[in-house]
Image (cartoon, rainbow, N blue to C red; front, side, top):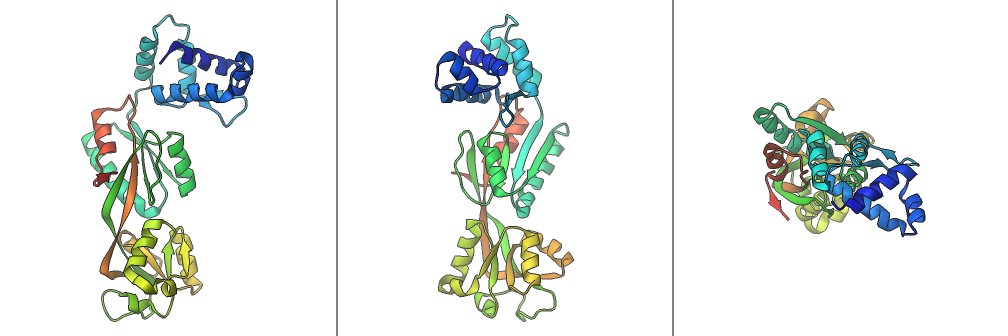
Length: 288
């Protein structure tokens, strides 16, 4: 990182915002902001909390500021910074409950190989997880749709999840151990909002999908609430079948079998060990 970037960082820390530094230097504020963003990319961490005015230095930013006048070369400062901030913590995000099955399986394998690794896990709505990815705050995230972010590889996990239909226990639907599209003609099917689920159901129902899908949902709580009010049946992942039983819901697999994909977003930091990089970059699937 050029010394000019470190000097701009020092000025932003002093004046409290990119706009204030731009006024002082008679430059476009976007140039100052871009320089700070590039510096954060090089150092692999956030240096400022920009949500507050004036900007507040993060712990990493404070450490870097204290090194500015240390007499070290730029390369030495970067090396010292990485050594100080080296960590075995991995930041994970996911937006839908069924995504956790992919993440937890990988966490378990990694903990066996390296018990010192720790995890910070964020579970929230898609918009929040997307924002964390945009700000480079996550190392590993699972979303049900494909959006491109700089500094992240996208891995599509193909045919990872088998889906079926949940119905209130005691409600007759079929005398078969599975359901077919014609079994759902009497009531609409509730489908999660993610595009991959909609596409899978469209293919399963074919031309009759418009009569079978009347509503969508974005959480198990919403789905069970809608079913309780008599809206219909629900499209759910097989991985949630045990949880559904506790909610007094019966799970039927679909026939023919329905599979959907998930999208894994991955990046790695300069301070990551080989074990962490292996964890991040090798989920089952295909890089796209």
